[in-house]
Length: 116
Length: 111
Image 1 (spheres, each protein chain N blue to C red):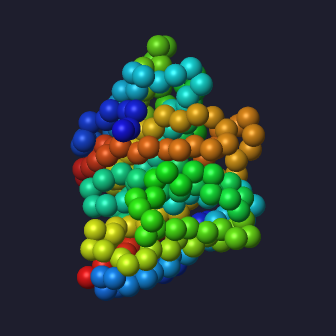
Image 2 (image 1 turned 30 degrees about the vertical axis):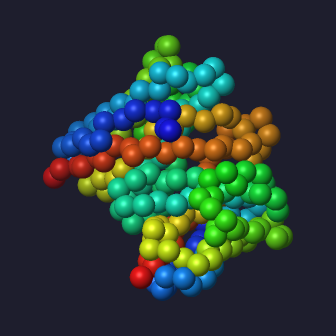
């Protein structure tokens, strides 16, 4: 079975532009997470979806960042008016979320975003 | 802030056991210890997790102290492909895990 996939693998954009990053989770996984990872740092939590709804978006740095998951599967992370400081690897993870059980996250390869 | 403390880097000779320590002195009774690793330019990969008993799978063993304030990940026979950053995290069981990664331990396996 396929793992978590993310597209594009690399994205170069100019300051001020709008970008969309896509995540395809493992089929059947109800939970989906977005993280951001800067060079030399561990992944930083951005947002968590349970099904279609954003259950926790407390990690989104500001209102330029937004994410959707309209059908409870594919998710898109949207960044408006990009800034150079947004340059990072954006990671997506999904998990099965069985109630009362431990819940392993499976990560995609990430999208490397470079804002010039 | 991450709830765990790990050494920033370690070396291990190829074929030898790699023992990676982690301190989690504020862990609560219903929190699990999880280990992930991240090979260069890839997403993190799950390795193993445990609550209070020692655990073993095909990748590694996890030893958790009786007071649960620390743990050790053991790679029994390290290979060059085990060179990676290893993250120790604590998180609640089931459902949503708001995982906080620290900076991990950079393990370098030396030929």
